[in-house]
Image (cartoon, rainbow, N blue to C red; front, side, top):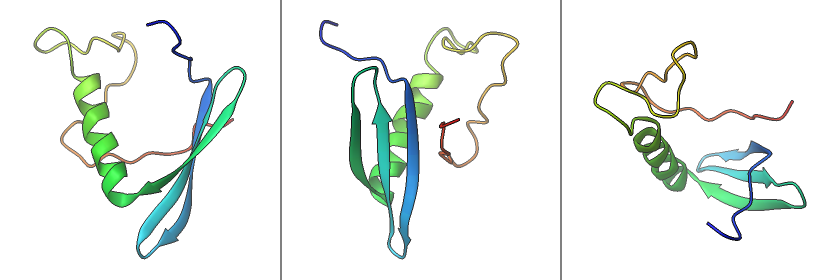
Length: 84
């Protein structure tokens, strides 16, 4: 995985609600990248993240510790800003 950068922070800004559009800002140690986000793309990302979070042994969430809350996979995915 040479050349991969670690995401240090991200945010999502809503630009328009009709049609739903936004801007995703992803921070790394040495740069910030901005992307335009459509509702279709957001739904695709949500589905991919849901798949990622539910990988592992049956009944086990590989990326979650036992004491952390687990996502409610039966609901819609809502993304919020992670900026402090």
